[in-house]
Image (cartoon, rainbow, N blue to C red):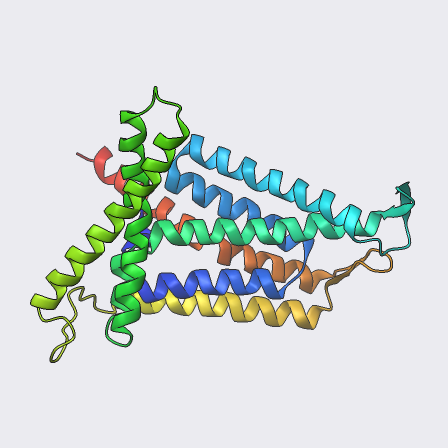
Length: 283
């Protein structure tokens, strides 16, 4: 059960836009931690425990990779830990690599959750009336990747005991042939169905309801108030030349507001789950 998926596509798209914007604008270690935990839990809810833990582990491995690369590429900072090849490795560069890794990991998690919520039909609902050609190309691209993956799996299953280089090359040629054939058939079909001629109507009709407006107001209020309180509180992080972190009571209030923002989808889903269990228990 995923209640958040049932809201208007524009509201869900604006939610992920707000979350990603906050992650990019506010470079703060506490905020990155809150975002990572919240988005990981939501991804775990969407994809299941095994897939969620595996993906979160990959994100943490990506953080480690960013830390190592930044430590040996960037040599700024005053706290030298040791020398590698005559070049200093500083505590500030390691910390900055960790922050950058979590920034990218949080963005990846947010986009992964976005991809699970915003299907191609919802994207076409938002862009179809304004950018019909872009909407069509985007929906075709989103459907092409899973189809190629399925076709590749079928071809590999037929040649799983053959390890010849020519066979692998043949599989690639077959995939390209399948893609061109499907594109040609779709183009001919759309041409004879009259695509691009006359007035276009929208297939996916979704009305903006009262609950959508309420949720949109909550998202905007949390994002705007959290940013305003955070900026006015003076909370922030300085990495170079030395690590300095400032926070106060207003900064803690901003963290609480951002926590509410990041956990809106899970709160809606948990609320619906509890409501459903209460109804079942009365039967």
